[in-house]
Length: 327
Image (cartoon, rainbow, N blue to C red; front, side):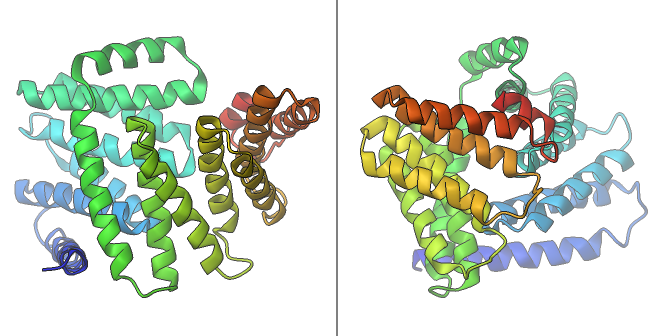
């Protein structure tokens, strides 16, 4: 079977399992052990489908299913650690999507609980790796040196091998789904955007420039496909700006930073006034100007970067952590 056929088959399997699981959890009593297992598997499968399609509703439903499984399971439930760890993963992914710090705080809390009840050394190591990732994300948001120190210690002890293997698997699925989608369709644009995000994530973990180049190419293709006024253009433009800026730092090609700045300005120009994400877009654009300043010593870039950081910090509709980071 071709990769496209395998990927289409996988999506059909995911859809079928989700439909079946939704029906099953409606039947038994709330605290039935089988229902708890079905809720857990439903949440995990919804998360897998989200990783391929990028449809946020699946992620929201995965969190709800995971939380319900925990709420209905007895305290001494044998698989309670797995329920807690999965919920932590769901929440951390939503944090990465919408930037709500309470999601990350909750992810750290439930992952620590999952570690406390682990009975198998392999399970504990895997959950400690998840905790390290969550702490690293919180450090990036808050600047807490305590989080950084704990994350570094955990990563040194348990590494990222399992995380990278899962990322490789998801990228393979995304590639097949993207190739199978109708050329130029809105579905394909969504799949390409999600695919690019996973490639960018792998680049940050491995430094493989092929992933960075492909993420940029996909981001550019998506923006040429979407109609003017599409709601995703601001965020996609800003994301493309970030990846172009990273390639500029690596290769020092002037055209990359010029395109990064152009995309950054586009993300601001097409955003609705008062949009909560504006501070992040301003901060990302400021980073582009700052990166060029550090390599060229252009003071105009320095001044523009400072102005943008200040604007981001003073944008009161945006997330407070984003504003603090810009300051």
